[in-house]
Image 1 (cartoon, helix red, strand yellow):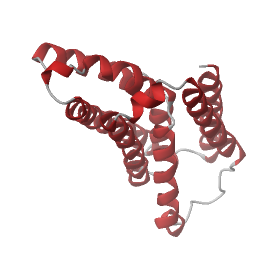
Image 2 (cartoon, helix red, strand yellow):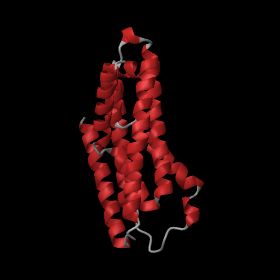
Image 3 (tube, one colour):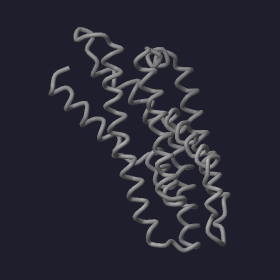
Image 4 (cartoon, rainbow, N blue to C red):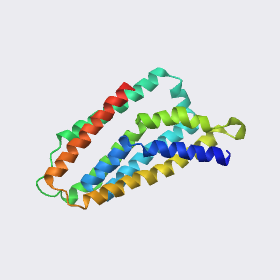
Length: 206
């Protein structure tokens, strides 16, 4: 791959990552509510989900999915459904009258945050579109094995995603340090729940 093509790919990838979507919202809200450490578990889950896309693209699974309209529709609605579930879960939760004990943020809670992040990115319509439609445009069969090129380009995406999502975690951590009141925290939870539901509708509409 030429330097010009790689630079173009990085630019396209950065544009995709900087447009707020389910992954950015998830990393931001988890950090805002539970702190930076939990936020980084969210990032780990998100990027693990991204690695699933990289593996699928490298193994040719993405190409098979792209050739099946039924598979794409199923993935799209599954993603929309999961975002709707997260949105309803956020709206149903109540702000505790006292600080959440540290014990409740241990392995089980962090595993849940990691799992949700993984599923969100695996079913993220924006990520699906990128790996099904955009990434293949930068793969040149005459320049080497397609699987290797897809893997290398995918890893570039993962590294950039780690940087961007970590940025959202740091930003949310800065907001959290302002000592959010229970009322403001509840309002932000409702806003994030509504945002997840809005993203679910957009994902369902395609």
